[in-house]
Amino acid sequence: MSPTYKRVLLKLSGEALAGTNKTGISPDTVAEICREIGTVLAMGVEMALVIGGGNIFRGLSGSAKGMERSSADYMGMLATVLNALAVQDMLEKQGYPTRVLSAITMQEVCEPFIRRRALRHMEKGRVVICAAGTGNPYFTTDTTAVLRGMELKCDAIIKATKVDGIYDKDPAKYSDAVKFETITYDETLARHLGVMDATAFALVRDNNIPIIVCRMFGGDIRRAVMGEPVGTIVRND
Ligand code: UDP
Image 1 (tube, rainbow, N blue to C red):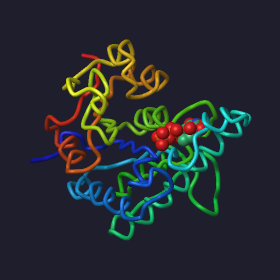
Image 2 (tube, helix red, strand yellow):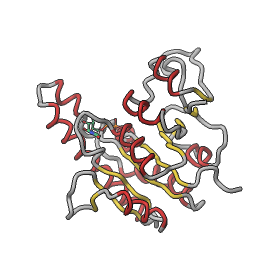
Image 3 (cartoon, rainbow, N blue to C red):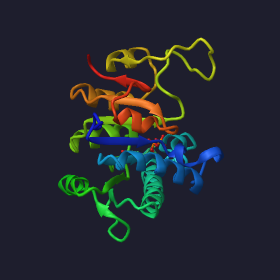
Image 4 (cartoon, helix red, strand yellow):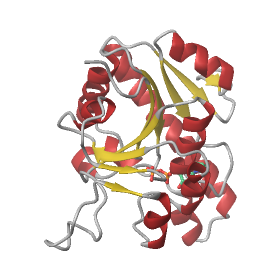
């Protein structure tokens, strides 16, 4: 069976790399995530990755402590570069070619993000790891995921999380929380479900790329790419 989505944008939060520690980078967890990614690459699916930075630094927390918001956001963007390099290293150790493309130029470390170059890398089977967010303060890596997903003509955006989909209320707090199989962008926003920020949804709503929210582990990312009913699909219809 061939995958439903031939080119995907996978969004991982920074915290996903921290394992049980919640902060920093756990090599064991990164290795585990890369194995999940490997099962998708093995099917010949083209992949771009956007990784957050929340395990190291978030602009909002910095500004809450009195830092100038833009400076704090640049620190957050640099944090995503650390994560990108960690994932690049592990993916390559596992035999998958990659390129890190950064929205903030740092030529000694990685390539600049150039859309056409990113597309070419993917066509050649390289995982494109998009680092440094959008390169602009006041944005998030969720918005980056949607932006890059659209620019790179991905068929789906997969947001891999700790939870296995979108619920009507927090399943960690409420035992009667109900999971949505599908939901529209508008309803997600109206119900304040907090899946992605409003800027990200505003962007994606007009382009109708499906966003699949699923678990990071247990083969769900692969199942999502195969089009199997897993997690929650957010789309217009
Ligand atoms: N960030 C930014 N512009 C962007 C993307 C990210 O300023 O286009 C900063 C922002 O401060 C954010 C931090 O980078 O808090 C880390 O990203 P995010 O919070 O989205 O990471 P995640 O929650 O996914 O780990």
